[in-house]
Amino acid sequence: MDEADRGAGPAYVGRYAPSPTGHLHLGNLRTAAIAWARARSVGGRFLVRVEDIDRQRSRPEFEEQQLADLAAIGLDWDGEPVRQSERDSLYDDALRRLPTFPCFCSRKDIQRELAEMGGAPHGAPGAYPGTCRDLSEAARAEKTAELAASGRGPSLRLRADVREWRAEDALHGTIVDAVDDMVLRRADGMWAYNLAVVVDDADQGVTEIVRGDDLLSSAPRQAYLAHLLGAPEPTYAHVPLVVNGEGRRLAKRDGDVTLRDISAGEAQRWILDSLRAGGGAGGEDAVAEGLMGMDLSDVDRIADLPEVFDLMAIPREQVVFR
Image (tube, rainbow, N blue to C red; front, side):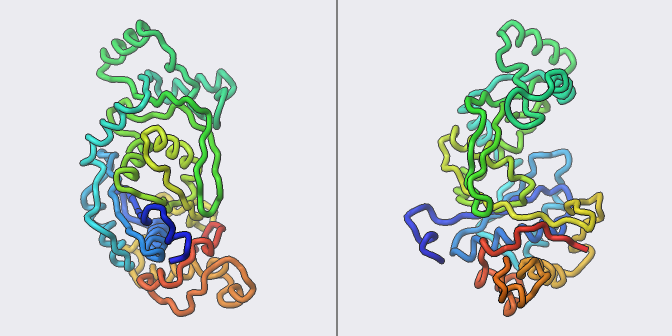
């Protein structure tokens, strides 16, 4: 553990939070291994959280298999995994503490309005244009009645009072991105990911979030929510994704590779190779030349990875699985 990790701040707590909607592919397992090795390398705690708020797609059999796959490649965790489906009271409490307003727009409504406006007046493309933010009480009552007549209700959005926020990332530095009136509870009553993940991380004392860099732009808005809830803003480490030969991230539609296709030992070897200097392209020569990567010449299983792990030395380019 280095001096920074021995500082006066809170003890390190990391996590991995899969959604049980399918099997974990090699990209998922690699990110989990990095998150685990990061926590263990600094003597920290590592948690697993089951993100099953999508109750229509989540399956107990996938949860069971995902946990088994993590253990099969050598990962362990502290305590029992928690499930988002059992944490409604926490999300309800957070929702009551946040400034919100009902939104009666469908996705098509928002897309149509953005097209007519030529894009959102502030923020990233596709950002909510504020359609329902300042409706009168009479207009809200009318729209609520219209939705109720068809058996529907409004979503609840955050009434944001900033246009952007920042988050700190170990690999990317300070990230500044747009914050809009994000959905906190969907029209179908399902909790929005941004709310659930922020509440869970705060409740579990997570200090750093290691995850795929496809979620990089979500970090500032999530840090902003943590700020509004009076919770410490975690730091982040967004790691490169694993992609196929065509540059698309591994996914079911691309024929992703899981532990149903290869052995746990083969998966471990591939993950370790992907973390070597040059992402496995240069081996020991790349280490000698000072290229990004770790010298894992004496590591042949993930269980030993924390002994030599260096977050700042992981390859920064996307990893291609062929």
